[in-house]
Amino acid sequence: MNLPDIPLAGVIGSPIAHSKSPQLHRHWLKTYGIPGHYIPMNVHADDLERVIRTMPKMGFVGANVTIPHKENVMALADLVTDRAILIGAANTLIFRKDGKIHADNTDGYGFLENLKTGAPDWTAKAGPAAVLGAGGAARAVIASLLDAGVPEIMLSNRTRVRAERLKDDFGSRIRIYDWVQAGNMLDQAALVVNTTSLGMIGKGEMRVPLDGLRRGTVVTDLVYAPLKTKLLETAEQMGCVTVDGLGMLLHQAVPAFERWFGKRPEVDRATRAAALR
Ligand code: NAP
Image (cartoon, rainbow, N blue to C red; front, side):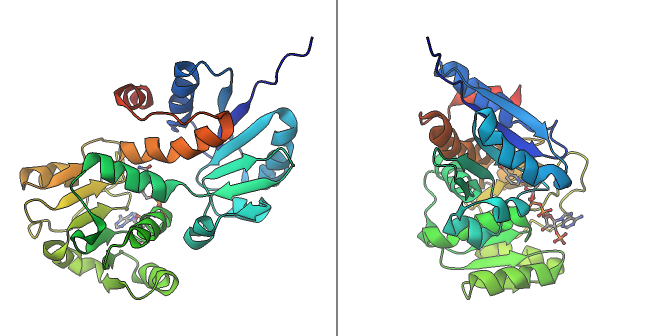
């Protein structure tokens, strides 16, 4: 008797021990009774191609990709989605039955779904968005906000040239502010997003003056360790609507899980609890 193959998936990065993706996907596999496995894999850049070419032969149906491989992995894929090309990075691989490797970026989707869930009254047309940071995560956030119809994005990054590169790629709806002037964006913003690593445990604190924040403005932080960053704490005290970053991590995983394991998973309280374990 032939037993069915057990589908495997995992996350490739270096380092990888901190990743919450294994807890998350394993929670969904258990919840839906799917006989699959999800494995963290610490892969060195020199081994990336060999590992990725071997995985489908070992029963892998796909993988998440994280730092430092999100950009390099695109060159190894046969098909790359337009949004991954625009963002310049992929976080999800699908190993198709025909042998082709498909690369996508679901961070922007995860960001918007988290925002819609955490701030249901926010609409893209509500007004300009202020984005702090211009790294890889900022590119996914900006692509999704522009796609959703935000009229203008005010962007500030410590290294200005990185923000300028982003404006070159994403176009005229972006207005750049010097990092020392970042606080000046806030009183015009309907939405404020921190995409820098500032505020994360072990990193520095955000020093952007927040006194310009208006009551009712939606403020979200991509940092989720701690869950309530100083930015969110201050914004909450000032009467803003705050959305933490954990939901983005959970929602970006939904399309991948569905493609690999054939079931669209729910993001609910139990999912959050599983990721925080
Ligand atoms: P990245 O490409 O390395 O970019 C880091 C960003 O932080 C850059 O804008 C950088 O500015 C800024 N930064 C770092 N240290 C700074 C400092 N001391 N002062 C001012 N700015 C500073 O990283 P990333 O992939 O975009 O990730 C950024 C953050 O988002 C990380 O904390 C990551 O964990 C989080 N994230 C969360 C999710 C989620 O699902 N919630 C998803 C993706 C990322 P420079 O350009 O000047 O260096």
